Length: 318
Image (cartoon, rainbow, N blue to C red; front, side, top):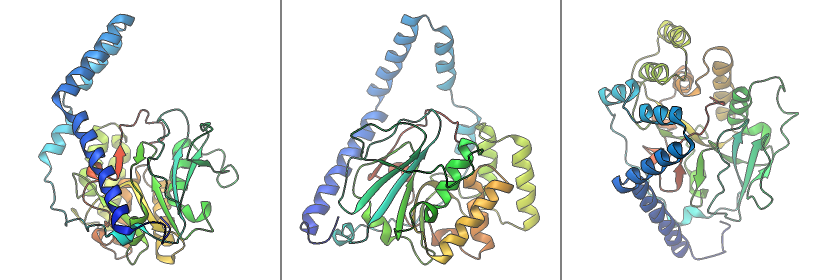
């Protein structure tokens, strides 16, 4: 929000009210009554269509898999307390580019609940936007190699906001399955010395554990994961160095330190491994930076009341 438009304490209270509604919404989705009703409706619809295959796949998806067991066996590291948002931090005369990427069919475009006057929402996509959408489409076709896969296009733009938004000082990237609930202006005050801010990973603190997880969840082939594991070990990457969630990134994207990290991250994705979450800690380690120096948005993005994270509908960008 631009300064001088409203009283900071009153505006902060409005944001707190939106957060509380989001918390209650999340609690409803996680309640036993809602879960049971959701299962019943899905099974009823499958049965009415005679879709036995869908019912079998759904039943299998309800069983805890190997990935769940691995999560349970992995220690949850202690996270530093989140820094409370001050009412004044909702106000800035800096324009902020909030953006997301969606290529191919998959996730629905999430319309933001809050639309502050200092934030511009941009969508990099090959899908049509609704006429009344808060998102402005970006002409991206001449900014990357058109032969790239949807995943490569997504990651390139995810890691290069400086290419997309040369006239902005700050940008905030969101995965396409994330809905904005409140004003995200306070995030620009959480970029640190590197000009970069993310959330801690919600469960893990080690790239080696994450490599095991992505194989179990079929997000990366075992040979590719083992190849990258050997590469990290050869480089001397320590275990439990820290791990970040890559689905929300705030950047002062023209800052030299931030640009160098993003360029090196892109090179890791392009040349070494297709899972960006496992390579960022390595990039930080090689640069002599600790993970906690950029884990400035909090300990768990899935419990961040300013955002609503939905399940991905499709994995075609991963």
